[in-house]
Image 1 (cartoon, rainbow, N blue to C red):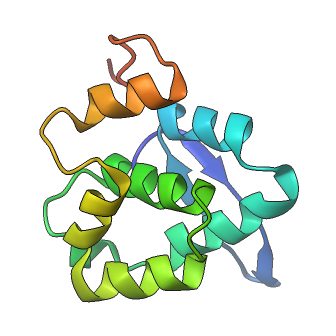
Image 2: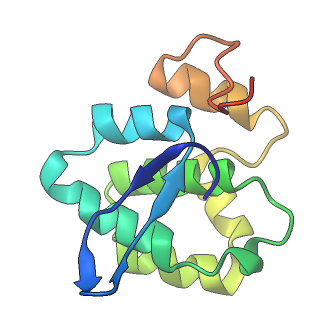
Length: 121
C-alpha cells in the first residue's frame, strides 16, 4: 500500500520481513481502532493481496475498506476472498463506493476534512 509508515509485523524467515506501507491516515485508524493483538492479522491480509487486482484504484481506499469491514466484524478471510473475486463489492459493503470516499472516511473516524492522509499533502 502507499504512504510512509512501514510495518514489519513478522519475520517470515531469516532473509525477509513482511512490509506493508500505509498512509498516515490508515496508520492512525489502525493505531486507534484495531487492538494491538489483532493488527498483525490485518496487516497480513493487506500484505498478501496482489495490488494488481485493484487496477488503478487508490490503495489507501482499499486499505480503508478492509479496515472498516474488519471493524464491523467481517472475517478477514472472507474479505480477502471477496477482494480477489470482485473488490468493488467491498467498496459498497464498506460505504466507500462514492467519489466522496475520503470525506466518508474522515467523518467515520473523526479526521479533519482537509486531512488527506497522504504524506505529500
